[in-house]
Length: 81
Figure (spheres, rainbow, N blue to C red):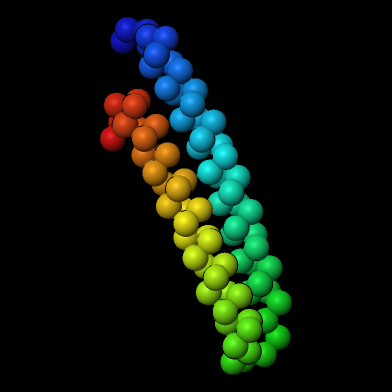
């Protein structure tokens, strides 16, 4: 297999940095969701608790989507997609 060109190497490095940032964000949002769910003391939850969980779920889903996108771009660049 031939070596990568400088531009390909730069593209991989940029996507790798983006991937690391995205996985860090996903971890942060997932931990926040776990804290929210772990704090639930009664069922049903209050309206305020439900809204906080729904809003956090959106943030966590957005973080997951961003991670999946950059991960897929890395696979594509590597020729594995």
